[in-house]
Image 1: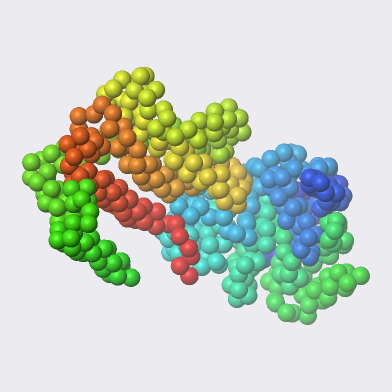
Image 2: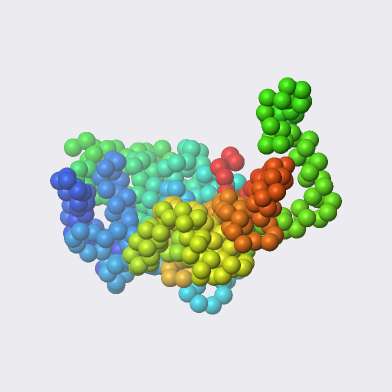
Length: 258
Length: 253
């Protein structure tokens, strides 16, 4: 079932393109802070791309720009064939803080994601995404009754139900314990290989990037700039701590040190 | 903890009664001006048995609730509007903030001229006092909606009226309840003043009437009744609030 995306999904027109994107924050009575400098990269259709870098490298800013939540100071971002000018249903976001609506049950949260512009909510679709994320039995619970891992599963179900073409994930497993994190990583890979969504995934964990990504983009901080691109052609199913993946981690770390 | 609090309250009342007992021999103050708890309780029972007290309570409570009901819709709409829309903020905030520091009592004479000496001026007066309390609560609440939730809504394609209906309104609803609670408290604070002027029923009227006839016990009955009602309404609303908004509150795990 699981195949290597790196070899199968080399596209001419990328699903998401950053073209010389700058981000400068202007603060009163202070020198302007350059957060991002000339960021350019492509994410191909069906690709799983990780942005990896230390805190302060602006990786979350890149994600927010891709989501259309903030506007870049210069440069353009293109999603599909359209220039990004604001948030849109073609780009779903999974936040580190889960961002579930606390007044809604898990199912109601997913329904909100599944709600079309007009017309009725497809109940079968809602139940499908609750099932594939393993949240079906917890569908009637409120977010406060859930563990961190379950909250993030529900948030992923909600994003999937919104049927975006690109999923933007901002350190989604950063607040979870290592066991839960690994379980959710595996679940995400299953969902990704079944749906073939394009994923842009922000992390500061080398292991996570090496395990998940087909392409790892390394960033450096102050200002945030692209440092290197590491291709990860290791075939799925991947085995954690296998020699191949450790080789990828080593390659990443050697670039980080240089 | 609670039992101790009740004990201290009972002790205070007992001490007050003891003071009266001491005074009946020594006469170091005029007992007419400062009745004992038993005097007040006796007077309350009398007023209750004639049905007079119930009438006053009903009149005052109705006025407070109606006044808050009038204040509620504009306070909620403007509170959310000022917090979340720049246009609404620019248009309405300066006027609202300019009028805010005016004590409600200062506008009561105007209200009587505008709305007559009957019920309407009293209701508008209470509404005026409650409006600002509700407005402020809703405004703060709507301004402090978790930015991550707002972002999540936007990325899910929830915009326009749907954003207000499905995100803002439920997000502020628990605080809306708090606003109503504080609005009612404000109403019970100002009700007496409006009933001092040209009323023929109500607890404020009862207090003012008792003053004319030098019935200090009646004044105490009126004042304490307002206190008890205000306290009772608050306790009841807090209980409803907990039940209604159980989704709120910290993580259970």
